[in-house]
Length: 127
Image 1: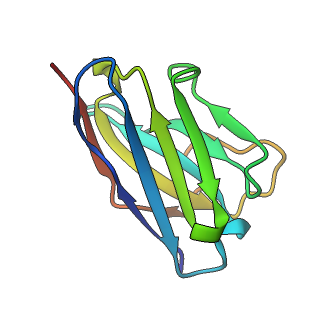
Image 2 (image 1 turned 90 degrees about the vertical axis):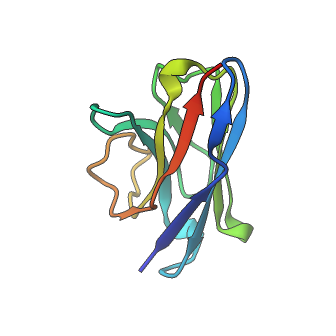
């Protein structure tokens, strides 16, 4: 069973940066999984932020974060990252890492294909 643990959340001022990490353990080796980052703000549905294919060669981003966020992975360390720059108040949410055995050419940024979820990390953007 794949287990995911997020870290790196916190409080940051508008325009600042944070890097989230997601450590994977258990299950198959990390390179068998597509990974995604999702977020959920109070009173809103969980939404996709970014995803990355098994090899890291393909990524996909929500329009709201394109040009500001970058997803990456280090399969040797079984870790997935989300570098967030130019943070805005609207980015405030609990951020979740998720894993999937998705093998399509384009990784999905909707929740359906993801079977494994972390516990979430709070990101608060405020002055």
